[in-house]
Length: 186
Image 1 (spheres, rainbow, N blue to C red):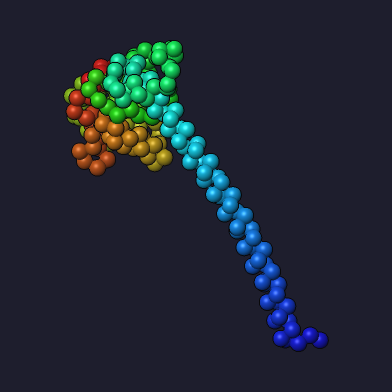
Image 2 (spheres, rainbow, N blue to C red):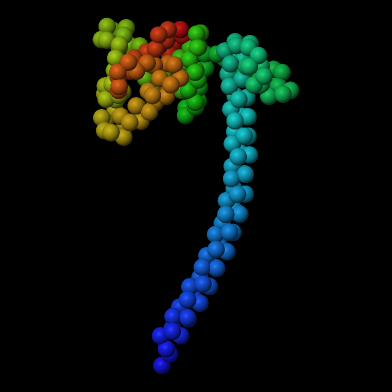
């Protein structure tokens, strides 16, 4: 029968081997992580380049001839690409552009246009300027459940951050000063 000390030494040796194996795996995973992080940073930089180009095209289509808009265009792209007319709506799931004087609501995707239009209609009908996300969900004929309300709240908060809406009280949204409905511009 083996001694207690001998058994402890065997367990210690097995534990040391396991630790060394795990350290080797950890080193391998860390090396892979470094490579993956570098690839991610390169991809992110590439995405930002594409985003800047798209914003430049959108601004130039809207008639903004500023140096920033021209600089954002792809080099060698001097009018060779067909640009969308300024009245065309953005594609669904697109980013919300920062509101500025003269930017029409049609620059927003359909979901965001619906929110801005609902608030504009409310003001136009004299029902008061403020709306909650629950009221928006009801207006859109959605089931008023937390998932839908939170999705609307997220969109409304993004519109607030980009200057299209204002949130004078927590959870109550209205059009920002100077913004009108999606078809009306500013």
